Length: 371
Image (cartoon, rainbow, N blue to C red):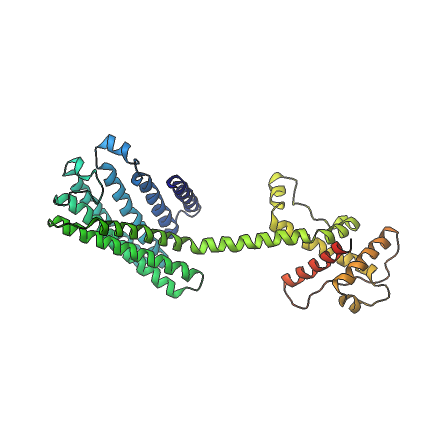
């Protein structure tokens, strides 16, 4: 499971770095890329055994220090995303000021970490000796800054959520709740540090509960920032599946018309592999088939009159039109002259493309049933 999550994080980091390369001067894009990069680098260090190499080279506790510095960078760049999204010179000044603050916090916890034996930071939060002032400062300093940065980002998320519409507001509210819950968990952990530094003890069950809450709030945050994108992808997939199905349902009508008017079949812009590959996309094939069916119906319409006038053709049911289409194809194959003028067929009452496509599909389905 951890390896799968690491692959997902790595893919997200690579994608965001690619977007940053496309817009190197865009502040929000740069901030998101750097935030994900910092989080992606901290995750392997936090995994069981992930910091062994760092501890081996730099001594026990070095991995813990690297992980916390990367977490500070993660939340700082997350704040920068909201700051740069607000735009304006004031936001840039605020980002520079926040950079001074996070740098000061990072330097402070580094000094605290190097002033104690390496073994003092080798354990976890629950096993660390908080009676050592440098150790308690290390955890409390990092935790308080995380609380501040996450709380600020949560407030900005809530502000944008009130200004947005669904589904974006739903994802923003989830993000705000996740960030707020993480900030609260960091505040509680800082209180635990104060209690243990003064010589008191915290029940292990309470520490474990806060850790679980931190994980749940992190998952809520991830769900919030991905909600709009995932929902958009689901909508796009539904559209892809529907157009793929409609493309297949149009096959009987398309085949009938292309056999008679092969010149109506649209071709790729060139014979290059790129154009041929793009032409195979579902959306392109779908729209191309609709155009080919429309052109074919207009071309064959003069053979469908059979004593009826143009308006009568427009009133034909799909099954009636399907029967006349087969008769018209036989007339064309026998070389019979066209008895009428070209008119538009399968015209829907509603003035939208989907209604037009439904009419074409109805005729195609009727052709399939009468085959």
